[in-house]
Amino acid sequence: MQTPKLVAVQIPNERYVIRVKHGPRLGTIFSAETGWYYQFDGTPHEGPLCRDPREALEIMEAVAEHEHMFESEMLLSA
Image (cartoon, rainbow, N blue to C red; front, side, top):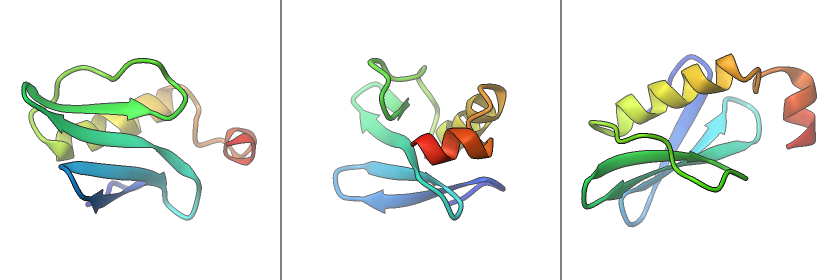
């Protein structure tokens, strides 16, 4: 599963590792009893409830874009 800037790699236990294409790991998408959530690495809380992993990935991309996480300086410090 991917977006123009992110790639999701499925791992066991209803989880996906999210990476920037050709770049560092950005976070995780995971399933809970109430639905799907995303969480950026280094943050204490998950994002809001999502309908499915695809929606979570699209929201992660929008948030990362808004927070300028794709800029080269941010990627080098990750």
